[in-house]
Amino acid sequence: MSSSSERLRHQYAVMTVILIVIFLISYYFLHRDNSGPPRQVHFKKDVDPEGLSKHLNEVARDIGMGNLTGVPSYHALENQTYHVAAKYHLATCEIPKNLVMLTRSVICYLADDTERALDGDNSTNGNGSCTLPPAKQRLQEVADIGGPNKTTTFVVFRDPFDRFVSGYLEFCNRAKKCFGCGTNLRCFLGELQKKLVEFEGNSTANSPFPWLLNLFAPQVWFCDFDVNQAHYSLVRYSAGTKADAQKVIDEIDQILAKVDVPSQMRAQIRSEFSGKGTRDLVVKPPYRLRIERRLMQDDDALALLSQIYFYDFLKFGYGKKVTEKAQ
Image 1: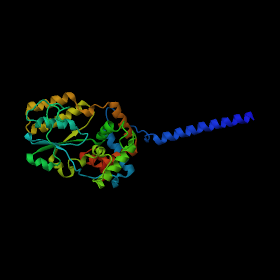
Image 2 (image 1 turned 135 degrees about the vertical axis):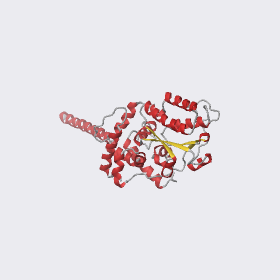
Image 3 (image 1 turned 90 degrees about the horizontal axis):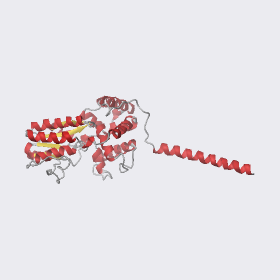
Image 4 (image 1 turned 180 degrees about the vertical axis):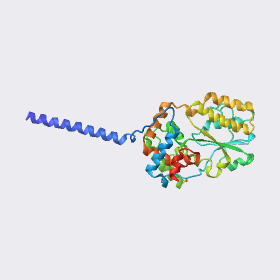
């Protein structure tokens, strides 16, 4: 009798252990960030552009990108943001995550008749060295300083892959507010794609995450690119090192020289931002590389990203092999 009871207790114990193991395994598979098998991708400080293009090409072929299913097309957002330095017939159009603080500071400094000291941290909010003039919402509104053909308007554009990673690291990697996906990249990209397509079809619909859609919307949705691109001077930005930031500053300086900004003011701008770098370079490289690796190792997540930003890749010349496959 005692041996029978002991045997029964033993069976219960075994079953309990089995159930616990099954629960733990189920929990793991339900909550893990479902990444595919690792690919042989070698990283230095950033993703190799040629390697990314090749990888995107493979993903596009596998998912049949040619039908452009789930790709948000051109969409002109209602509220654009143009900042103008009327004295120099210079303007800039903002795209979130594309050096907004730097470009605001430049325009603010040039628009301030008192030419007070430039301060990249404070000059854009009215509490620092100067006050930014009221923003315009359409390029046509810039006509009051000489017309869009006489005004030089520059726009900073960015590798869509790099821009997404930067935004995700800043707002979503440690926040539950990004569609409730936590750190699951595939979940977040899937929700983002769905909401962007819904927004495109019904831009008057109230979205629970309007700021998030604005932050991660394709760059071609801003600045009315489909009709105004010919009026813009484009500045290419790539995050990674101070050398990358310096290259952007050099390009902006060339634009300032063309609109006859005095050399001493240009020198002040170069000095301020060359020494300080940009806010997008503050993120520690290991965090950035971790997100990049996760994207490159997950074909489904990368496919979603390439669909969401398909027209960015096409318009700005990134991932050319992908766009060639889709045409």
